Length: 148
Image (cartoon, rainbow, N blue to C red; front, side, top):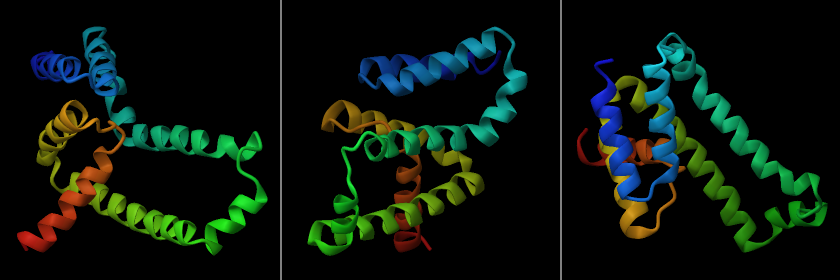
């Protein structure tokens, strides 16, 4: 129950900054804690990211299933300049995400900074709150460039 105040603060700031995803996540964790379902926290902490990435990947594959993306579109991904850039972006994104996950595991104290940065981005720059792992990856890159 000691975790209620930080969750409430995150929830309220997320509401004020119109970060609906973070507000919903904070509310769910808050109510799980209130309902004494915190025995599920270790499972969510260890497998929640996989579940979220699975949902995201499913959403990205739906256009293949419903025909919005065709075989021609797939081949052009390797034959057009924007397609090649998309492949490079995918490589860089996946690499940075892996660095972000490693940094969060090694230095969990960066999580509040990432959350604040995401909230600022959503509120002031029309950012989208799907990038905390990428934010950690960029943090890892910046740390390697500037600190180490």
